[in-house]
Image 1 (cartoon, rainbow, N blue to C red):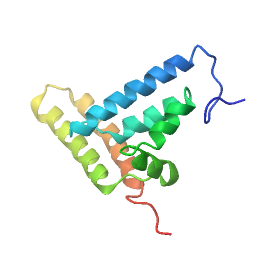
Image 2: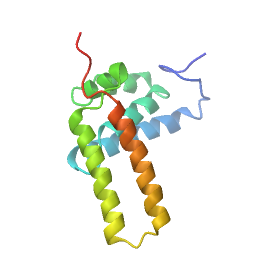
Image 3: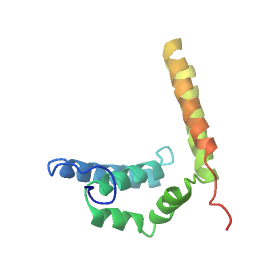
Length: 135
């Protein structure tokens, strides 16, 4: 048996946790809509995921939201990351790594680890389409 939307059914005690996480991710995503260094869509995807495990009502509300819904629907249907979002993500990673390298006393191993993780993240972002396929 499955819970709301998809995934394994969790005990009633886990649903409030998923619900709280959904609202936390949603709040961080809203803040990200106003701060250029904080991404919005990944947090909305996480919120949608958490709501899918806790509340069908709020999952549907967020999925059909007039502002956040379209990007969530494009991600769900086609795994689309818009070109502007790709540029912002990769630019943010590059700026962060540059800041770490030139303005902190981070050890070389930390810089290599951060750079490697950022390269993996950038590779993932670049493999996703920038727009839905033409019909």
